[in-house]
Length: 353
Image 1 (cartoon, rainbow, N blue to C red):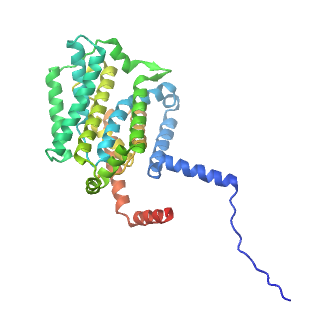
Image 2 (spheres, rainbow, N blue to C red):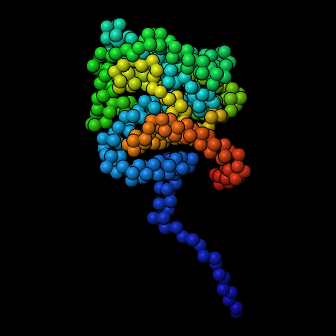
């Protein structure tokens, strides 16, 4: 009786330790977002470059807190801009809304009894109304978002200058000023405000039907309508929320400078849009995230701070911000046009089935 030896192919065995490590890596990748890996690498490179160039200054706790404090205003405004871009729109009037909120808040404090609550409410309400006006012009007036917000950029700034008579309005309320100068456990209050706002926006976009509808609205407006989403109402609400964020930004700006500034923060609208696009948001809508926007904000903040530490003129910082926006859009276009990206997406889809 003959026996036949059957040879089996060796099977790869993955131990529990390797499986656990792979699972953790996969979870980390999902949390960071594959599209943000390159951004994190750029952040790390910037930190290394500036850390090596100015090690005694850049890594000092005072400087790191200064970076966080400096980007608090940009963070809040960029969060509102993220919603707008996700929905397929664009708001280039955000800095004018910040300036308008700043001036009206300071004017209220100066002429209506120096009441803290009234001053804060004025900034938030004025910012929200300005955003709602943008939404109405775009939805009811059917004006292109770029043209509409370009017009209101000039209009809101003009109104702010009229209210302030072309001057800064001093804020004499010490409690109001504390918002921009006070710290809790060495963390500036403005940074805490920005973190709380980021958590709220993240939760709404990731865990609510409103957030999912925003993505659908930006990705496919026709499908959104067919699904019963009130697209016009959503757009008006999104621009109003962007205005609300600008109102909070106006409070941060005024409390930090202790003045109402009609000019707002120079270049803020460009920085906000750049941060959102750097974070992976598509200008066509439907793609992007709050986490990505925060990465973009940090990149801009670290770049500006590092150049300042190295005594580079601020004009170069403006050049760098403009180049970052152009490069980010070019990378998006490159990825969208390349056939290999389509094949990669198809493979991912098949793997998920």
